[in-house]
Length: 427
Figure 1: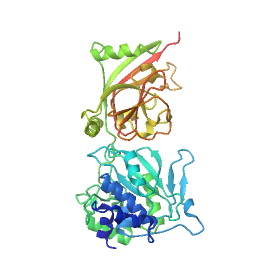
Figure 2: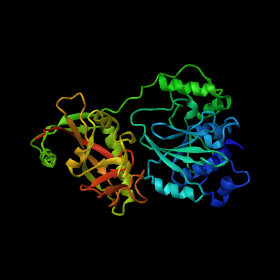
Figure 3: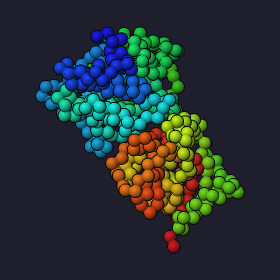
Figure 4: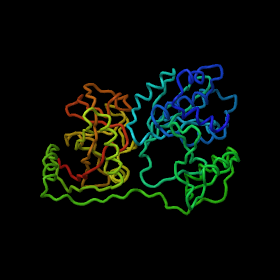
């Protein structure tokens, strides 16, 4: 097949189940054709962008490599000993599917899985730091594969792909067109789509960022597969930078300070050391975008914004200020599943705080945050298996304990607003 035909198999929204079913279970169905159907659902039904290795290895190069016959397909997947997150053997090509969730609409993971099950495929769902990872076909004879559903706001700060050949993507109804995730046609790169395609065909690649341990590891992986590095890294670009934030004291005479002071009295024996307001322009702009997406999903067009408390370990607050509440800060074994937990009662959030062991003053930190709860699912019973808000909802309002908890499951659904530093004195 031509590149254009391969693109259309994933981006043509006019395709019907009748067109797609033979790729799932027909006489010519394969691991790659089943991957195409999953990618089609993500792109055409949920407006994701397909990018990365699957575009490079399958759509452009039409390359297929299997591990040795002595390794059974069920053994192609491995699980991290600590996180339990699955990954595939490096010898497998194409390896996985990478899809960036849309920026212009709220992505409902439950609805996505419902669409996939219509094709008699049921994924196992895992959560990595900035994405959902779905494992398919672990015990299918065609072999397993994974789908990475990447949050649209996963690259807080400036970031470009590692190699030029990983910079291509395809989009819904652009049936004959490859796009670039990051425009490399401009200086200093001057690499267009045609050049990237030619590099893929020749199995050569340009390194885009300056070298570090991770980039070096990825270079070695590509070279082990027979790729050749083309020239030296194109390092004449700004380094990735973390978004900056500014904190300033909140006036003790302000109504907001007095309200916080009153709320903190629920923590017996607590003394406020400081209340500081946080300003992170990039996070705030992203947060506003997420609010709009959630509001568009709600019948009253309201994001249901609430001010809530979030207790955290003292050594983690700075990263939250820089990067927001990403999955790395989500509670993995919470009573309402894998999410970020908030409360309207400061005492409840206090239970989640932890001072630095080396701090003799036992100083603790609570973040007062803006949270877009959207449509809340009221839950009276614990459910630790949740990995996303229930279908057609954006958050969980848990009332299974003595105090309410509010749980969100998406990146940048909350914005840190105030840092409350305090101590608790034993009576």
